[in-house]
Image 1 (spheres, rainbow, N blue to C red):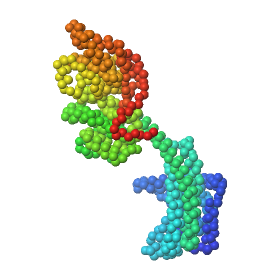
Image 2: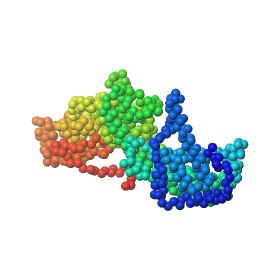
Image 3: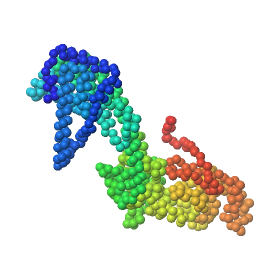
Image 4: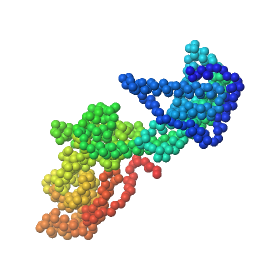
Length: 631
């Protein structure tokens, strides 16, 4: 048994020699010389031991036999180390010499194995010491061994010995931290990191030193326990500083290694993210029989929890509920507006009414994108409140969405905080990168919300007043039906018109010559340059102009009214307006917020068809409740 060498009582001379020798443990000044000594003992033979073999299935007899053989061999090595430590500590050997003898015994093992085996051996000794302390009062054999170890006397003087035990426990804690750190380096996946990475090469160069001082600390701890159990507590109170010195040295080593390990983990994470991102890209380039692989990759790849919340039942469900369905992914932050939700909810509810129709078989899933670093209880409540209003499916918690997925959504799908509605067909293919625009323009008539359907709807569309006034006032719709002349002046531009612009941008046809789009672009531009005005006759738009030319046209009615009997009011107005417009020639301007997602690289002027200049604008509207962020 590893502890039998500790049960005899040495002479005082041996004890004094022990203390004197141990106090010189830090006298080795030339650390480079020490490193050369331990490197000379290092001759690993490539042997490896996988602790997971202990979980081999019982019927796997070959693995069980190999595991038992390996375990017996390791047990023998650990027992030898424990005996060596105990003997050297008892005999008062020099700490450096004892450490080197252990390195010689462990020459065929890797650096991490040397350390783990030595720590296991120390655990036997130290564990037996404290086991006796716990059971000696109730076990006769343990009581006899405890008396030989002077445990009853030691426990009676725990007060004076407290600094020593505190120092001992602190050193052991640091020893364990260094050991774990070195094992972590060993387990770094070589597929993602190599010695070409400076952090890893730096750490590997320092690991022999870390192993030396950790094993030497094991020797020091064993020596302290031996002096305590063999020489008595009165000789033990002067030793705490030596343990503290070693702990301080090991702590510095540990902090350096942990810093390098952190850099290595960061490097590995970056490599894995690149790999995962490429795998996600490849997944969307692959043909699938259904949409399960795509949806699991986007939402949650594991099978341990139901990742979705059913908005109608408020119960958690698995992704399987979306199998072979058209899926509309609503991607947004937590600031999605009521208007944006209401149009989607209206169309969604209509589809539920006509659920038997093949073309209405689709589901909506909310993908919330949040800042992980600022997540707190307040944001959690805001998320839950918003989630509770949604009748469709939603990701049950934003933090289960992988970072690489968020990167994909931002870089490939151009998500910039403004909500987008990505449409996937039953095989998981993206058939529209953002269907919100066509929903705003055409409502449920846009189903199945594909880019092909969007192009088809544009071919059928005409420039009509309903695009401007839809939903504003039912009275205006009646005037349109009655064929009346209608003036619209100023006011907030229709969200439907902006959707038209973004729809064309998304289709890549913003600069195609399209008379209707030219008028829409003019109107949006005038809105940013002082105001707009429109004259229509029933649904037909007669004049779409800038306020600085339409208003003077009205004021100069006496100049052009004589042409009305022949040409009519609408044509007479337009001709005079066009003359004023040719003189004024107002500038065109478009503003795209950085959160808008797909922004065109270039844009032609709707007036002169030349390429417009691009500027960067900073705008502050002094909104209440927005705190200033220092930079």
